[in-house]
Image (cartoon, rainbow, N blue to C red; front, side, top):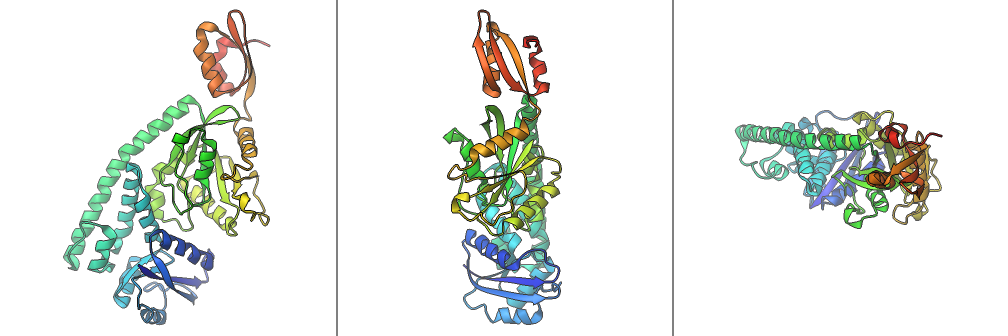
Length: 408
């Protein structure tokens, strides 16, 4: 499928158009769409009825030979979709739709599929009237047939019902996820969430900390390789922690997706520490950091400690970077700087921990085993009737073991 992509440079825009169009081409590639033509216009402000000027519409119409689809770099309004479709008589879509298509293909778990179905339905509902019969049958899959106002209304009801049913099913899964998080909190294990722009190397970093290869997550050099939140048990400076890999962000991430994936992204909100993975080889890294932080703000993340992990230093393109504190330069792929990252994580997560001396009778050997597996044991010694233990842990946690505590 060949595409013509369209971008507009206007006064109030808050992003770099050239970089955005490069990213749009990457999104097209992920959807198996080849960009063969490009059109850019400069305007004082966006045309509310056509997005672009009427003269540019006619110019594009003359460029449609061997073009199957016209893709706009910003999300179009339903009115713009309708008017452009009527004027150009070709499939019209936008950046948001491409992201939704990628999510739909990559979604593997039941939860992710439901989340994408909700986001896609909410995006499609107001746009049905602007789509030709052959176009919105492609967009929506099965169940979108016929033509005319009556059929559009039937399709609208069908989509609305699908969204409603998906929300009900998702609510059950969300409850299960909340129960899982509650159990984790009861275990008092620290939770670290990896966040960052899509394709920054979060999954590669996750696997670098994940010793068990059977538990490793998919890592691939492509946009949105990870849609499911994966949580693994890892050791940070001999402390047992939970490390969570999350879906990557992107500039102008569709609001529908943020809302639909909110239940998954709650993992980020409730984390004890965020590791913000940044692609240090990308000259647009500052923009990507800003985008990620804006999405985190929208999710309600405010006072959670954050470490900036500037990744991909093995590509030797990070000399221009002015890092944000606290930071570490790493290569997750080549395992460079991971010891320093682990130390920085430990310094933040366990700064309130203290050293305690315990004397555990042999009949309570399971307690010794648990402490040895989940805490930093600095020293232990087998005595005649008990085991002496010098261990680092949080003051709140020591209350469970007060009867074993040795007085100084």
